[in-house]
Image (cartoon, rainbow, N blue to C red; front, side):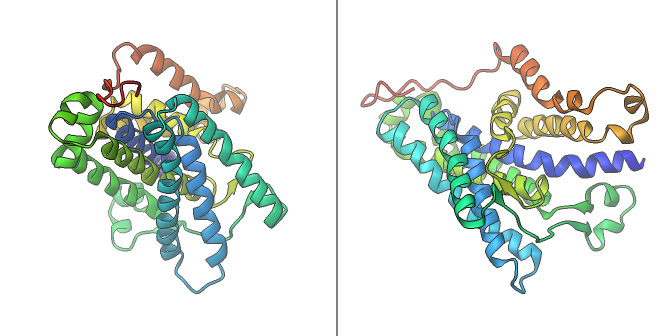
Length: 321
């Protein structure tokens, strides 16, 4: 049973960054912009979030307050960086894939340059511990308390909160309806007075908000609040794209997909705790490949039936998408 507790407690902090970034990609694609730059947005948000933590770590602030403030900083950084994608793809009508790829290449170099100049290292290292041994009262509940309220991070609960908020915005608000209309039928949206440009800027900005936050949560829950210019976010931005596709661009299905990929990653680092897998004596590197192999398999089997809503382009911008 202790192995089950361990797997659940270590899967959730990995799943939350994937969930948030995939939800961000969902908002962007449903507005009509394919956001290939999620990897760069994650890394940009993680960089500024960790930089903020680095500068305030000597203060008397509670670590959880520092985490919340770092979350806000990383989200704002993500929005700022995503505006570059909006400028290129919405305003300047550049190719979305090429623009996203260029932005992904920009961030690691920027982080390495800054880290080398400021810290003489490859990244930012902090010493603030955000780990929660136990949530008061809730952590004492039988079974559930040990599964979800012990040995965890506050990022897990924030992630689920944003999932609910995203679902409400997406399905229950006028904004969500207009956003989906701009991605699925921009001509019709434009004909009833909806500014498709503004809605697409909003969709990409929301992906920046969630992507930047997801990058910081990755640094907190996976990298112990550190970030490195060489390793970046270990392909989590691209993995989030797979999670989004596997989840059919729907919030709660995206959650299940994020949990699936996060569990595979956690499993790869927990082989020694599972006797029958440990007895196979297979190199751990092969297990670490599981999430990425699963990505290719899932995409291969779902590529024909998993299609994003196709944006047709609007009358005054027929070249878009």
